[in-house]
Image (cartoon, rainbow, N blue to C red):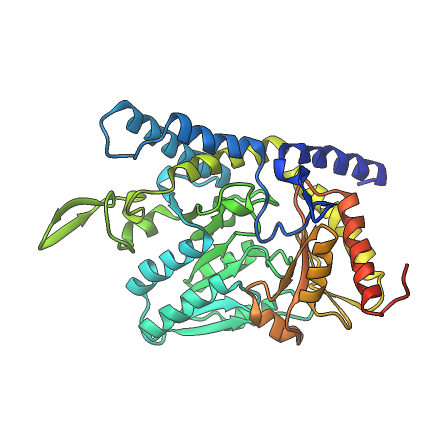
Amino acid sequence: MSAGTATTLVASVSDHARDFPILSRPVRGKRLVYLDNGATTQKPRQVIEAESRFYAESNANIHRGVHWLSQHATDLYEAGRKSVRQFLNASKDEEIIFTRGTTESINLVAQSWGRANLKKGDEVLLTAMEHHSNIVPWQLLCNQTGAVLKVVPMNERGELLMDDYQKLLNARTRIVCVAHVSNALGTVNPVEDIVRLAHGAGALVLVDGAQAVAHQTVDVQALNCDFYAFSAHKLYGPTGIGVLYGRHELLQAMPPWQGGGDMILTVAFNRSTYADVPQRFEAGTPNIAGVVGMAAAIDYVQSVGLDRIAAHEQELLGLATDKISALPGVRIIGTAERKAGILSFVIDGIHPHDLGTILDMEGVAIRAGHHCAMPIMTQFGISGTARASLALYNTPEDVDALVKAVEKAQSMFGLTETP
């Protein structure tokens, strides 16, 4: 891509910043520079209005009412399921389960599929770069079943050691759980290869897609994974709603995880029978408005174009990496060849929390800490990083504001002369 084309692309995609009302509000008397998108993205007006419109015009409980409003709300909810199915290219609407988010989706698989299928001596294979949400549920499961947790190591660039991965796969490996994109490093993992090798060893694969779906096209049939999880709030959608994709035959064989209304066929005090998927895993009143908002978010990113978003973020990532790396005493954490729009770094003489506080005074919002990835921090011998994570509405001016604020922090700590 030529420099001229790149500049035009950045300008055209970031023009969508006007769709995000919160970006026009000042913070501490400064222009808001929001670079904490790995934690949650801001919401476009189209999503805010869709959720508000549901409550104003369509609010009713679903699946149970015979009145028009209930049937209308049900239609909207199930249309949201179809929208997600198309977004992921799943083969059936029934392969889409609505949850509270990635964390609940992973816990659902661990407690439903895992408790029904794992036994003492079986192995669960994770990677060294997993978020706590893709570690702790499997630790709990192993404690319950006697299964054993194994870990695929990574190198100092933040890339998985695939030779070690192949050696760890064996007849006892039942499931491999891997982040599509590392939230702390930005590494894009070779999921297709991971799935192919796991299936060759007879294991299933769960992919944590929380950091992937807003930044690249995801095709679960092409990946050939068994489970895929993500959260809407990292996809410009509402909080409190997420998705578990699972292959239909696997979901059909899994027992319920939670009990309650709408997940049953019959209930008596001596016995209950359960609904087919997806209702079997959606006990109680769901986040109906959240599903409507998530569908609007999917429509939004598809209208902008995921390929365009990805190219835009890569241009900004390259710019930010070059400029931050040029500052004295800076160490980039995560230098994989394939990276998404996440830049994590540490600065000699400044704790990440102190840096985050100073940047906040300049209106620059980043994340500072271990990012729910403490094993990564342990490997790199640090307590945490400063993390700037990019979205479609970020601009080269945002990168410049980040760099200027970091320079001010270094000057305040006496690490450089006052600019």
